[in-house]
Amino acid sequence: MADITYQQASRHAVLDEAMPAHGGDLHWASQTFGYAADEWLDLSTGISPWSWLVPEVPAHIWRQLPQSDDGLREVAAGYYNCAATQLLTVPGTQYGIACIPELVEKGYVAIPAHGYQEHQQAWQKAGHRLCYYKNVDELLTLVTSKKVQYVVVINPNNPTGELLASATLNVIQESLYRYWGNGGLLLVDEAFMDMTPDESVVKPNMPNNIIVLRSIGKFFGLAGIRLGFVVSNEFWKQRLAALQSPWSINSPALFIGQQALADYQWIALQRQRLQHQSKVMEALLENALGLKVHNSGLFLTLWGTVEQCLEIFAYCARLAVLLRYGKPFHQDIDSSQQSQGAWIRFGLPGEQLDRVNVIFQKYTL
Image (cartoon, rainbow, N blue to C red; front, top):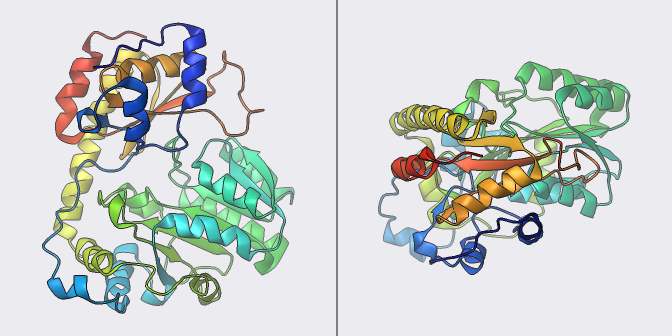
């Protein structure tokens, strides 16, 4: 049992600096707060607490090298509302995030000031100049003033939960094409889009200057199989496929992905229970903490000062509940501790909702 309180501001500062780069790091949590890995309730990732129930994988799939993904892509095309020829099967959306910046000429790219940090790291590594935006108005200004030729949108945003309407993204795509032709690019990370599929920009005939990333891991609760899709035209598909090594996606992942994406009865149930629990959690957190909660359906994010957010994080960690804490990765934005520049993300607890409810019954920020 841990006995770490982090009550003083200086201790908070130490905790702030020690945060891991991503959620789900139970080894770090155990080393820092003293609980064994199996004692933690991990709410730090935004991955569904309910996983699609994986059937027994046939023995021959384990024995043989990965075969064609044609069957998987056909099923995925129905789920994502596109043609199978638009889909490139990849080992998780991280593949597209890392590779795409290397395939375009160096230029200026619009990056969300709050967002999954692998995007900004990949574009920086590839030698691009980053222009950060805090909201859709700032993004539209960057595009219409021709300051950027590439745009990254995480939709809905991780961690903020903000969802841009597909109509707005169409305006951005059209503007990029008008100013830059096929030399511009809109990259939309839809890893958390499954709860709001009507706002997806994926469609059967997509423009040449747009690429969409989709994930199996979050909504289906199958992050461990490392499976996702790049949705694009043939030009981008071929360039990204050329970077893949043989058998980059394992046989069980191909089998499981095909079965899961075809299970529409389970998909409907999943949307219903995630939506219900996220609303329950939203009310619980707003009542307990007095801070506005942004609800994406798969995770909830609240904003506060650095001290407020670190106090919430430490309080939960002392009770073996791991959250995700963060600040803008562009330190010039909202850097004052008096501004609402820090955030805490809560995943959904699933069957352990009562445990979270007890934790916050007597807590006041």
